Image (cartoon, rainbow, N blue to C red):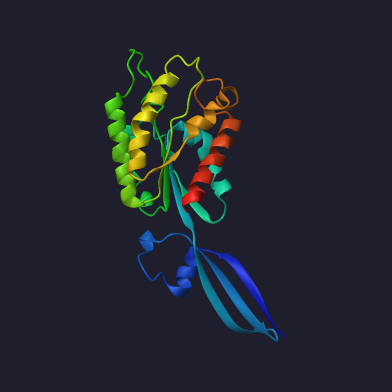
Length: 236
């Protein structure tokens, strides 16, 4: 009697060594392979090879991503996804815009790109009573980022800037709300999906924002990561 045995998880390198890439390996995405062996009387009679293309998600963002939801997202997305995210803090909008040059090779092979930046822009960073970025600068840079990301993939998600504890001395939620309102309608017109992390975090400021009055608690990071993953899975 014939029996079928299957082996998963062969590396992309092994698969390419066996059957070739059929294209530009520099742009190839990670491939899992399924080898099915048809065995009759303990003799292999047939081998079927099936490719399984991994989905690739890229995450760009400030420390809300880097130290908050970012480390949790790959595990929540699961084995069908590969995840790229810079090891550095993407900081303010113009820094992120500049970073698109450095990260291009990863971004242009992404199926979906999720990004957030705003807390640096909306903060009185240097202590002179002025926000780090003006309203016009922030809106222009966010829209430039979005246009470039849309050139890499149609699936772009912007996460609204998260609120701070009202006791924060350098950032106000009124300014955060204004900055979000400057860009969200225009991003929607461009076809960018909106992940409203601001609304999520605002539901429980005490539970979601830690003692430094701006960054996510472990619980806040878990909640944001779950919503990021939900939004990513809606598009791919």
